[in-house]
Image 1 (spheres, rainbow, N blue to C red):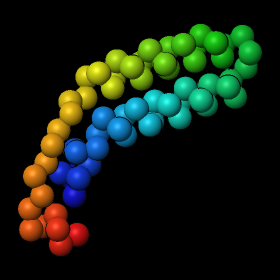
Image 2 (tube, rainbow, N blue to C red; image 1 turned 90 degrees about the vertical axis):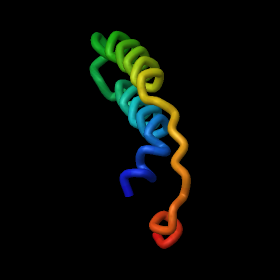
Image 3 (cartoon, rainbow, N blue to C red; image 1 turned 45 degrees about the horizontal axis):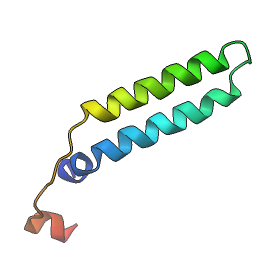
Length: 64
């Protein structure tokens, strides 16, 4: 299970960051632009930091 999550970790980080960035549209107008900008920058940094991994399938993976 962990290997599957690890193989798509970069995608999950980018997806969560995108949802948080989109969610800043519901924040009051005086804070929205700044929090949206901060969320976009943090999403880019987090996506950069998470490594791309390739996990070779094993019999356990194929059974799932």
